Image 1 (cartoon, helix red, strand yellow):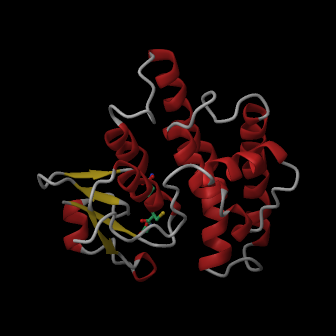
Image 2 (cartoon, helix red, strand yellow):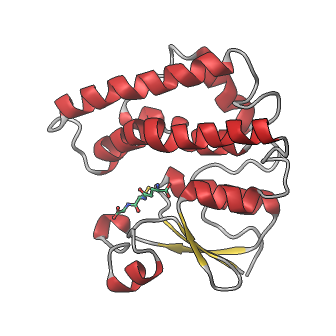
Amino acid sequence: MYILYGSAISGNCWKPAFMLRQRGLPFRWVEVDILAGASRTPDFLAMNPNGRVPLLQLPDGRALAESNAMLLHLGEDTAWLPRDAYDRAKVYEWLFFEQYTHEPSIATVRFWVAYLNKGVEWSEKIAATMVKGHAALGVMERQLAQSAFLVGATPTLADIALYAYTHVAHEGGYDLEGYPAVRAWLARFAALPGFVAMPCTAPAKPD
Ligand SMILES: N[C@@H](CCC(=O)N[C@@H](CS)C(=O)NCC(=O)O)C(=O)O
């Protein structure tokens, strides 16, 4: 049985939970109270020296950190990860974009505003970060004006990774009105078979 250590408020944690459910792999969700520092205890650091969730424990006991590494591991030999080398590299391109450009501006602002209540106190920093977030949304908009999903006509791991925080961007104050192709893609993704919204904490099958 897989064990997924996660936080229900985290899009990064939704990603592997979504993929485990897509694959029909039973898993146990262990809620980690990140706001109380529960991912920074000596016990947790022994599992993930980076002190963050999600942390996936494989059925054989080995641990894996980084949400997009989990997507790649769980997506192997599925339609979510193309076999063609170029298409596969395009998936990686979006996964790296998500972590370096999208998540640091969109997920971070959501966390500051919705969970740390710093919307007023940090308004200057938030406004500056939102400029970068809108640039990231613009990149997605340009691609999604051309293709139904980020890497062509069918969904891939790239869509899971980017859906995670785009669909809750409004919680940080982002207005998606100016991104019609992104909004259409969000609806398309949510209509996929087996779609499970955030939080995605329950096991795929009863333990
Ligand atoms: N790049 C990592 C980011 C993980 C991350 O930032 N996790 C946050 C929740 S989304 C966390 O554990 N925060 C608690 C902390 O840093 O103490 C991933 O994609 O898994």
